[in-house]
Image 1 (cartoon, rainbow, N blue to C red):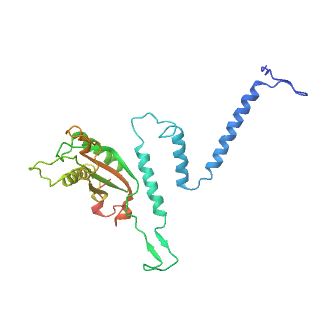
Image 2 (image 1 turned 180 degrees about the vertical axis):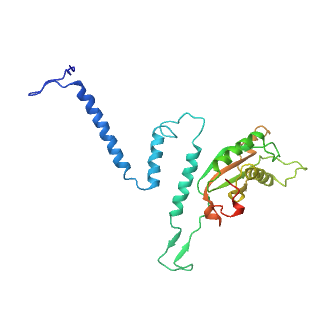
Image 3 (image 1 turned 120 degrees about the vertical axis):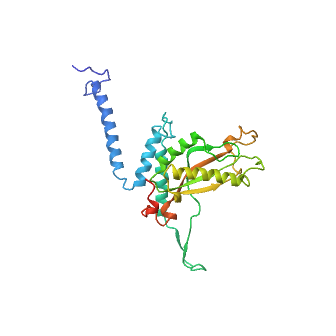
Length: 257
């Protein structure tokens, strides 16, 4: 026989069984669940659904929000997919202005986006020995992981070289620090092409010299190791915005898997 809740009796009523309270809570939760299902059914656009998924991930500590999920494998693919979604969304936006006055350039003025948009550094920085452009063994392993991550995608890849603030010796094969940083980026790009299987037209080489040091006010070779680096960056800009054959249908572009 169910227990009786010691509740105050009201006129014309009796004691309330304890299971009624639990049943009421369960029905309230079930009602909330059906409300969420009805709300999700109204998400007709892919970008709106993606925002809901991102909010749920943050709420449960996937990234940001109330915490970070303890994992050794960061959600890099989610970041890459996010970049692709942003680029796809921007490609839908009109880039042609509709001016009322005809003006010098005519009624329709084409606007060209020259910046690369959002950037996501993949794999951190790859460092070098002083005055050298030779890849370290651990850098090669990291580059192979990067190649596997971005292979088959349509984003352009930036390879940005840096150098530490130091006077090059007279017998150096490089003219200056800008030249040194370029050949460091070139060494990374060549490895991604020959060993990683990426197409050359996907890579954009960029030399920064010693203009963007990470470790400031350090003068020893060991202290400036972070400045002798190359960054591999996933760009927002897509191949179909810059290349005549973005899908690699020609024989020359079919090397990448």
